[in-house]
Amino acid sequence: MKKLIFVLTTVVALAFSQMATAQKNIVDIAVGNKDFSTLVTALKAADLVGALQGDGPFTVFAPTNSAFAKIDSKTLNSLLEPKNKKALTNILTYHVVPAKLMASDVVAALKKGKGKVEVKGLNGQVLTVMSKDGKIWLKDQKGNYSEIVATDVKGSNGVIHVINSVVMPN
Image (cartoon, rainbow, N blue to C red; front, side, top):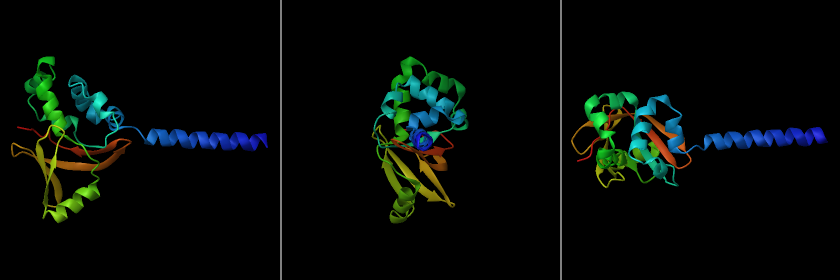
């Protein structure tokens, strides 16, 4: 009987530890992925880590390191300086929508909106999500496009969709 209780206790403990691992928040997921190291550095520089570890729900359109590499390195380094925290915060909060939008939600909204739907970032500015050439794109306030290259990376407080370019607010 003691062996049975031990086995059951071990199985339950393992199951709970796996559930806890599956329930990382969106910041933990980004920190754990080397392709988001520039994003994590920027979040730290803008002092946004704590906010994005909150309850949410959040949808983060997360640029990869290669997306950040498209920005001139001098400009990017300048944005990471403390004196430019406000500008960096504006850019990063443009990538976050205060709702949990799964890929299926976006596709349904695109069908309803005839291939185009607007979402508002945490910075209050609009991003246009559009379907073009069989792909889903973000169009920023400056008319630049970023392709959504991976979707539905689920966290305990929201979801991450991976994009291949940094979107820029006004």
